[in-house]
Length: 241
Image 1 (cartoon, rainbow, N blue to C red):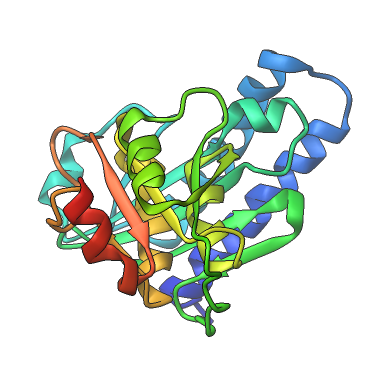
Image 2 (cartoon, rainbow, N blue to C red):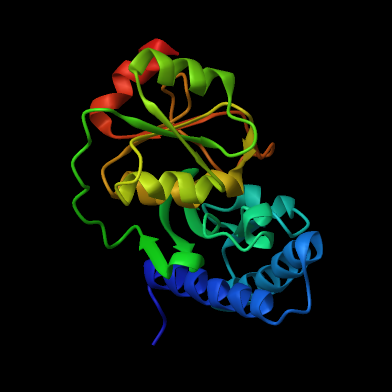
């Protein structure tokens, strides 16, 4: 019996995460070489599985040479084998595996695995979000917080929460660890497709910073910015931008 798209996304994200933990635990690699080995191993697993399970769909992966045939497809899988390679290599927990399905450019189905926390968040199993605190929290880059995010946080009186990967930041809102994820430093489609799909399924706001929708499976896969937050905070944040 074949898996549904949602089950497939969650299964692949979870299994890729387990593979990555095994690669790290092997002790054969360290630092940048660990990140490279993890990326290559997880990518090989994900790409092989998707081509076997969904041969008629398009595929876009950070670690795979882009095939322009995906532009002719309605259904395109967009994956990031290791989102947060630095954090993975440093044996932190704020890294993720992204597996998403964009349908006609819309981030529709997906899963974000947080292997270091043994957590998989998926579009078909949303749950109620924890209540927002009085003092809001904004996740920002550990190493290079965007000026726009810092400025908005200052105007909101929000606390800055440094964190690693894009997936970890977006899922922190669902997990009740943060309230706003504002990014203006540039990303690619694989950085945000699965997090956006999951965030939308959980009832969060997800858009570009001008309020326009996030559109995937584009010829140019660069995505300059995004905003993921609770719906009740979206209008205020967009106005401040």
